Image (cartoon, rainbow, N blue to C red):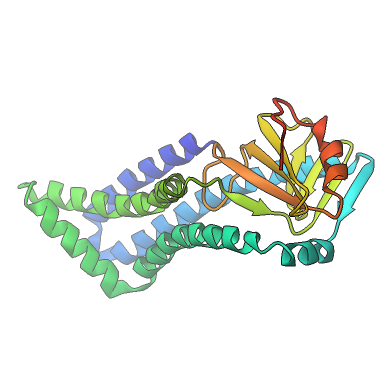
Length: 257
């Protein structure tokens, strides 16, 4: 499901639930529960469509002849020798936290009735200062109330993007395991990347024992799929992995350190 369609369904749902809550306020808690369940369903449907594509791509890649597989124990030992990676991952943890906090806020409003009612009363008082008609004011208040959840959820993406831009960083995924076949690369048994890798840049760091892909279209730390992300592959033989991937990357910009 495209993000634009998800936005459209969310907006339609906000208007619909605002309308019925206006006329059936005695059932506000149940209606709000219905709204929450519907939003979760939309998110699950979108995630399900993405998951089906992931499974299809993983099966395709696994059909290819296996070239290299690096296990978690090997990567763990190499990471322990790379002291700089812990500072890099600390920044990543902050980005994850920024994304997680709005979801906690939404859950708190959903689960704590007095908080939900207090928030609505605050919205009602605010809207009442601009709308004189009682019925219209109630509808507008519920619309603003439901819109807050959309704003909070989407705001996490914007805040995370600003955070990375301010820090002048690119989101980083450090693979804990990976497999390379003739048809593609599988990261952590969950992220398939089919060859050729488009709009990507390949770098090598022999001192720190890794090869890194900078590629567009990999969601990371709450970022949209259009964001450029880094995928780091630790290996005992970075030159060998670099040679394997070198011919699999389109629009290659070779950089070595």
